Image (cartoon, rainbow, N blue to C red; front, side):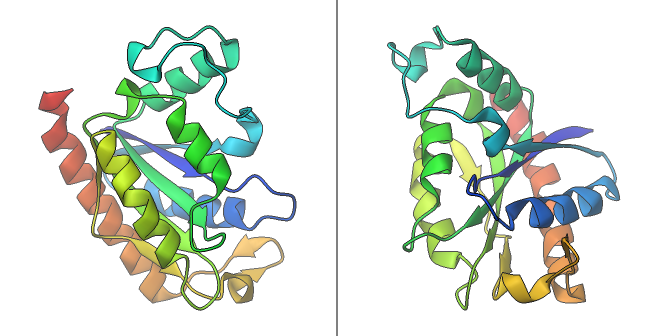
Length: 185
């Protein structure tokens, strides 16, 4: 069994991210040997990085950072659910990742991006070097949701069969990589 954190990156009012995260959570729960936790960055409300010591030391002084560290450390794998803002991931996600160091290492990450025509692909690609620098293994298998607003009805994300299949493929790879990387943690 692997512990998967599905992290909703957008924190702005009126965001669509929680609907995409809820769909992924429900789908992940149907997979063998995956236990999921929904993690919403809006609930953490992390200020701009404000720890006095470098994250690599793990010597956090703020209670919010300690709580964030415990949540990230508890996972064997991640799915980052992210929109694209100006061809980049949202600043809330960049900030949240910056808070920590060792907690991320040697774990795989799936990217579920959404947006307009590009489906957030540029933001997902821009995030990969940052993840790699923290020894996170970003997967090739991903979920890309173009024109996401057209797929939300009554506050719920309505996935196509193709998106369901892309997510299931990503979950299978996350599980494989999480087991393989466990020896390095």
